[in-house]
Length: 397
Image 1: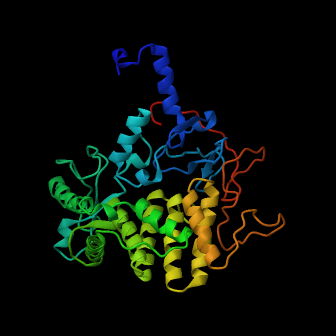
Image 2: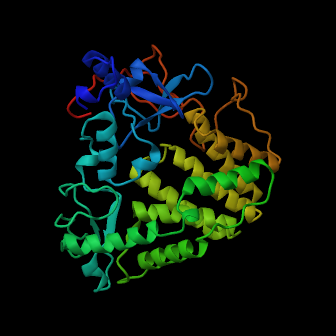
Image 3: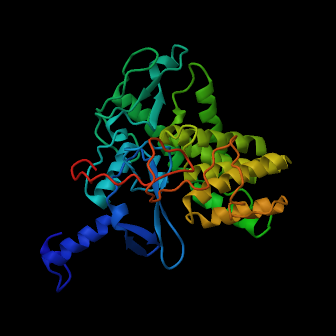
């Protein structure tokens, strides 16, 4: 704002300092922020290979946790926005980044067609095919819906036609409207998870299904049918559209509350596949959303009476969490509570120093960004080393 809008006594130099501080600090709590000089030099990417992780307590130590294997010389790229927004369309990400950090993201992902806006092809639907079209990067950004009339989509993967932007906007807007019109009780994944986690921690029965359960499950069934049918309704592609990813995640939580374990597990697996595809995590990468979806699958296995599978899934989710540090305390408490209810004693010491790691599963126990003088030509999960930070690029952060 202009100087006339500044509080009394604030000079131009003061204002510049506050702007620099705001752009280069990291939120360390609901009403606190911290300045971490080394982390502040890390460039942003919407296809990150690292994540910020703040420890609990007074010191609030910050770490850069590597989320994918790196080679020596690779730039360490965290994401400035949270993981939920990272799964949203390009325009939403760009708006959040521009408003908060005052730059336009020019990362690889933002330079490609929008990987979370993939729809079925209208032309193929009428001819018994399953073509796919994607919102093109050349289009004008949009925030949530498809309100970008006159913009273009990619050519169909099957028939090669390019659908009109007007038609695609109407189709996508219809699905968006149905999601936004769901009752409040089934629109928030965080709220549904919180209620389930708290019930398990307090050793109470699962809460009753919220208002809007029938509407949500009807929308989920319609989405699944549209994706499975050849030449059916044009719909967001399962695993390729953020709306589909949202619906299957919500459905997984509601199915659990209804005691429908098999359907909950299947929906959670679809959500997990969507997250890992968008994040390009491969076999060895990890994300916090992995832990939530593995926890959901573990709860479903427990409902089915498959205790061994439940223990394996809860344990894997807890292992992912531990790699990130103290960032999801409620989920960690929930996982420990579930494992204890299954007779498993949880320890975080890492075991004896001479214990051999289990080569059959990824080992995330030491999967963090740390300084060392050792040299390495290739880095794998469990042996991350300090690579040095690239100089920030002011124009294409």
